[in-house]
Length: 371
Ligand SMILES: Cc1cc2nc3c(=O)[nH]c(=O)nc-3n(C[C@H](O)[C@H](O)[C@H](O)COP(=O)(O)OP(=O)(O)OC[C@H]3O[C@@H](n4cnc5c(N)ncnc54)[C@H](O)[C@@H]3O)c2cc1C
Image (cartoon, rainbow, N blue to C red; front, side):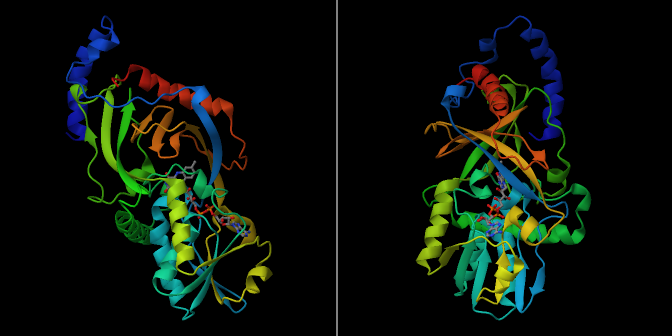
């Protein structure tokens, strides 16, 4: 059933359910055939970690041009907003083409987040020598504070700034990343497919960006579920097969591969362009994320902060869910609750109030779900 058919049937069913709900208890919503899914144990005392990450957002989208710095070519690859995990291999392959065009055999990659690591691995795949230079390594990078879901259009640009050229580059990057991730399936679940439920009392508002940047046929279609096809109390429920990344094990695996193939990592902060100019490599790929603001004087890039609150992992829970006021993703290292984005906020102090808000939103769903 697609969204339109669902809305038509939900309209009729809603009258019946609406009237019935005045008198019926929650248990009457379900029959013995109603599907069950394992409940998340959601309470404040099970929160073991809270993090705030800063998405590197550029209204015009990720930067991918080249510039000369003295006798060096700088290939930019940063500013992925909320889609850096999803697009890392794709924009990395575009940066690799530009780097290879210089004819150099040794490359410097600045930055050791998901974008820098993917770019470095792609260069190694073609036999080049690569050194990663970075101020911070995982888990002290933005990439380690992400949700870890396939979301290639999330805060990737301002929807008003989508040009045909941007769309074409984005689609190329998206398709390349998607294929690369399929090749990583089955490796200790660093990448996996999961069910993602959207569970709401009201239809979610349209997302301009995610509605405009879609590739028909890339993912299986979202299914709208009828009352007897899901275990939730809420009225609008849909399910999508989606990809997720187990962030710590994924980054560990990619960095181990990088070292196994002869890569070097130098922990170093660059504060002046002269320090980059002094590197021995003649081509430098800039994957410094938000760090590019100060280092390359990028006036456009701005942080969009996002807080995650982590519950103790539950092996039996293996789905994602979003509802009004919050979302969860069950990773191997914990069940992550999130859902906010504050534009222009540089503060990475977690807010207890935000955790309480999202815990309450998810608890509302879990309390009434058939588990
Ligand atoms: C809460 C949250 C949820 C998210 N969820 C998702 C998601 O589900 N899916 C998705 O696709 N994306 C998601 N994102 C977005 C994604 O995390 C980012 O787009 C991505 O991490 C950016 O990666 P990066 O490698 O460019 O930057 P970073 O991970 O920030 O790495 C930058 C690197 O550059 C180094 N560096 C910076 N400046 C300097 C300097 N001056 N000298 C030396 N080194 C420097 C840093 O030390 C670091 O090593 C999320 C982000 C947040 C905050």
